[in-house]
Image (cartoon, rainbow, N blue to C red):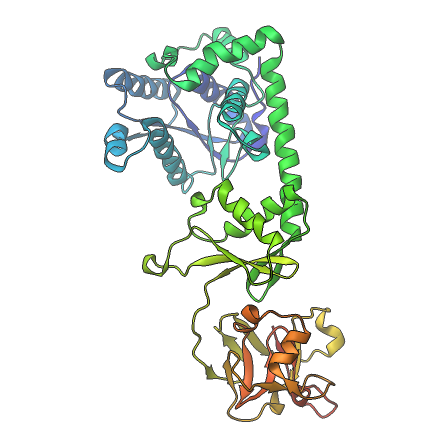
Length: 435
């Protein structure tokens, strides 16, 4: 029996996460048997969590002896997980998992891949656990490969792995806590999943197939939601008329651009959903750090047909307009000289083409003020307030748009419009693009 084809890892530096249990021993053996033929540089790692006393030490010593016998380099990391859990609070199992994956991230600086021994039964158990706890379709992704962490045994059941161990006469150690059904995972493994197996003999494999289907559908829905997000003046905007399933996903995608991703709950999404029925300008606060913790507060605002995700407005000091260069205004922008004619700009409405020499000396970059006016491109003079209202730009957003102005006359509203006074003509010598 071959557990997996190692050709997909050809030429890679692979480190196997070795606990000493039958799954990881079989994974390491399968790699060892194929490594030379596939040009794989094989190593192993073992995390000694300090949870099970002498038994934990036994597991570490077994892994050391096994790797010596097989000629495989082994990295051992010892961490007192119970002490960490006590110091920082939290569940011992969760802290142990965090320790493992932190170790994997460190290893990935030296190897190409870290391989774990998760298999089909683990996926089935995870699906049942998450369904019982409560989750959406994203939670059905169960155990995935990501960021250099691979799972070669995901298509194999525990029974198949145990058969492989017997076929090759492989020794392993048994975690004494595996039979303790006070642990939720063990109860699912020893009681719940076998009960499903009595309903249908292929129940575990069907749960794995369901997880794969859920992952594919989750990816599709996520792409649809993210493609619906509009980016305006440095903000992310979600259309209010999106179907509910896409609206919630799009909102989450916007919030994940902020700090404290783990602080968001379904209640936050429900508050944002209420904005769809409220008037323009309504807002709800998002659970992110306040200014004293190093970040401006963020809100979701109702903007006509969108929900905008934005930081609290911050004062912006004006700065001189010195032609070409980068400007760190509330909405950062760049002015660069270019030989392009208007037709060469690619049709991006937010990109403005100007005559750089037409800006009068003394222009500054700033935000709007009372009394500002503009003579829009090929249009009559009007107050900036009326111009922005006509363009359906809300008062909130208009207060953060950067302007290039001298006195009360505005020569460019970045990302929106230029003054007729700075348009490109046949006599223009220096064209510039504002984007």
